[in-house]
Length: 173
Image (tube, rainbow, N blue to C red):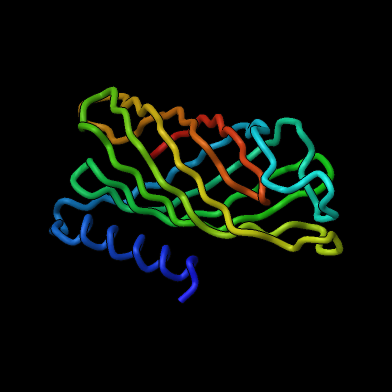
């Protein structure tokens, strides 16, 4: 069994254990819209490689995520995004998991995002690659009786065989 399949099965198993204990009254659905920049950190390709390598500049990234909040401490969602590299662009599909520390007005969290990104135009030497992000963030809820919140997140992102540091601002409603 390949390493990718094994990691996918392990991630699904851990998330199913984490989210299986909730009743319907504990679950709310949310939409998250976020945008920001991804700063170049390190290429995992050798300099002699002829494979496409993104430029060492900042990259704009926009995502929309639809998902469920489980007891205000765990979020599970699916999303899509658009990334604007300087010479080309990409569209991505991914899963998003967030674990919140508490459910107060100011709420730190950690998150994992995994999926696939396809590049456009397709005449490049690469058509797409997996994406993985390990995120940390701070969510600020606007009031006691509203679930609208804003958040700021950063972390480490692996896209197109390159590591980036994402800096995103988002709104959740």
